[in-house]
Image 1 (cartoon, rainbow, N blue to C red):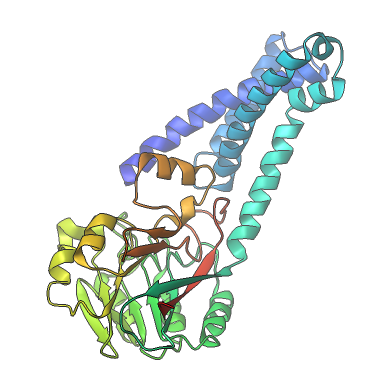
Image 2 (image 1 turned 180 degrees about the vertical axis):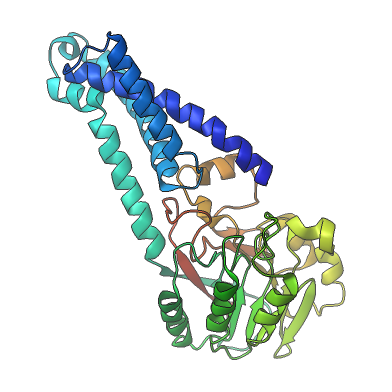
Length: 378
């Protein structure tokens, strides 16, 4: 994965350089303040464009994210301008000065991009609660079960200790039966002290039957050689705070609900990953079977094996629009966000997570924790 990032950075910088050069040239031509045909002006524009490209050298920096949005908005408005020009005909050539100034100067593109980024920052920091109710024909107690779902904290990106404690206090007021942590609570940028801090805070959540955790693809820092903590230190930090780790394991609750925790798919070559059919082979199928899997994959296999509800994270709801649509179109996962009915008896819910990876901007889905209520069918 690091190799892909190293390769994408220079390619993106070249794309940014070319984009800004032509973008600024058009803005200068529209403003008519300088003669765009002179060598010195073109050299100055190239220099400015190179400076912007350097600012975008970090693919996950705000400069790169803003430039990416600006390029997308510019492409959309180019289509809009072509459409307006075609429909307006001669009126466009001899009139519509305000539109041509806003579009040609690039001011409209910058304003829209800045507004989207501002919204994304606010959206990332404003964590909301998402409520989901699932009905089952299984013979569970009449009041059902309430499950709090937290995933993709990526601690250190946007949440600090005070905000995370506030979220945990909100969950405590709900008197949940189970809290599940569906992976990527930490990542490669989380320090050792922050790793201890986040699990100390999450371990303080009060749920009747406990807090359960499955690893995500980032938790054990597989994408860096400069790990800030070891796997044994991570394991100790989790378990010492009363959180139960489930790695291809099952845990029965109240004689009627079984929690199944899976090893993350990206780690199967190193740690192994049992098929869901094998994990459920010895589980009482009259139980409501709640499966936790960081990545929303193998929906059909879960349906065939007997999972009643699959809970996942990983996608961040796409994090940056329109990535959510791209992920959905190309089928990188079986779902990107929200509740999906797999078959007559199996459903899946994919949370967009408390935060996101790499940068504190989230435009395609809310930053959230989810409260899932499992109720007997009416």
